[in-house]
Length: 210
Image (tube, rainbow, N blue to C red; front, side, top):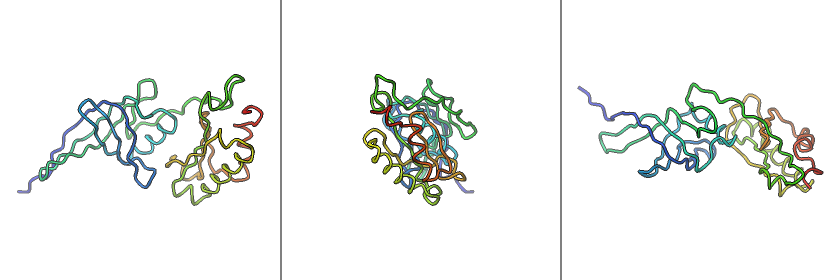
């Protein structure tokens, strides 16, 4: 009779989110959770990765946030090592509902990036343009989009106020390349380099940022 080489049980941990350990430079493979009993590295299955990327993208999940993670604890009988695999992540209560393989987060409310008369963009909210660096987006012009955005911002004197950030998958590979303007969270799919001047003028008018 064969014997099982592992013991599977459930775990339920609450603590501070410390960030991700990334796979291929952009996919959240492991979630770092700091608890009263120490730091845990919890494996993130594929079905949760896209939702966690979006949560981080929309500032729903930030280092230092208190979260709760449930899943399976798998202990090897041979060497006693334990592997934790998440099946559900409870985001901070002031944000959205729990992330699980069957849940889909609602679209976050939009908010203007243009500063108020008494505050610059940097003083009010950090302005940035997120460009997906996943292979599908890169193949369909994502890298050229990032370069063109950077050049246009520098040309308009906005290079020190608007940051270009490359991100992981935005879960819209068929509409690549994908770009999100922060903090108003406006998404652009299938963006063309020729459309960049209009995008920048719409979100970062030079007169409003000087």
